[in-house]
Amino acid sequence: MNALALDTSISKITVAAKKGENLVSLTLDLGMRQSEKLLPAIDYVLSQAKIAPSELDYTALCSGPGSFTGLRLGFAALKAIEAAHGIPIYAVNSLDYYAAPFMDFGGAILSVIDARKDKFFAKAFFSGKEIISCDDFELSDLAQKLEGFFQEKNSQEKESTGKESRAEIFVAGEAKTFVEACARRNFLQEKKLLWAKGGTANLKSLFDLAEEKIAHNEPRILEYEGPQYFRASEAELKTATK
Image 1: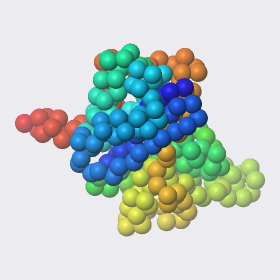
Image 2: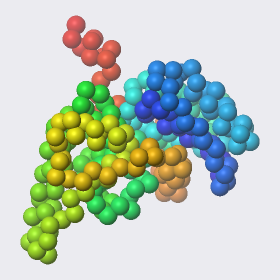
Image 3: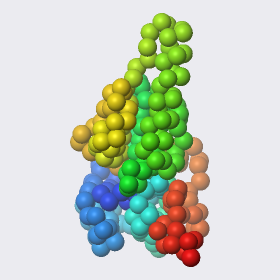
Image 4: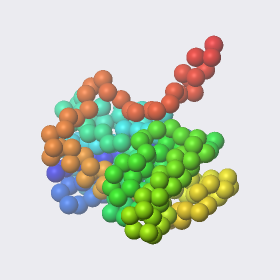
């Protein structure tokens, strides 16, 4: 299949094009310059993969949570391709995307995106099952939820086997920021926090998750659908306080 995928949920944007088994990707650490470079990046990866926009079978993107501006840019770019060529768009939760390459890890997986000021968008799994639903968390509240899960798990493990449960958490997504924040605030100190120091996931996972949706006849996003923000924008907050 020919496909294009975007992750604009964080400041480091990634764009990839896939033609059959061949994949071309580009990652740009741009800060506030996403709007300048996203469309040229899309043109570049499509040209390198030798795919015209009209030849795409589908496009995919992270639907949020994440950067308010980045998510809007990603949706706008793919909806322009949809409008011009009728190419369906499939949206994947950003935290599911970051966790996907590590789901074979036997313990807890915590997928996080930095929401600034010791807040994180987060979702957690244990042995492939969701244990904390996707939401916007204060670091202290998230750490407390994880501690509570492990206390209950440890109690169950001791009762059934006489042994303590595995106290490790693999952190995916913007892991470095989360691990450093925990160290600064002395949270989760008894847990071993593991993370892939090479960075975030690559877009192969996003293609895989989108194609799972296609295989299961899940719907494409509709014309009026947009990102999942999980919090109000700064403009909305200012309007609400007036």
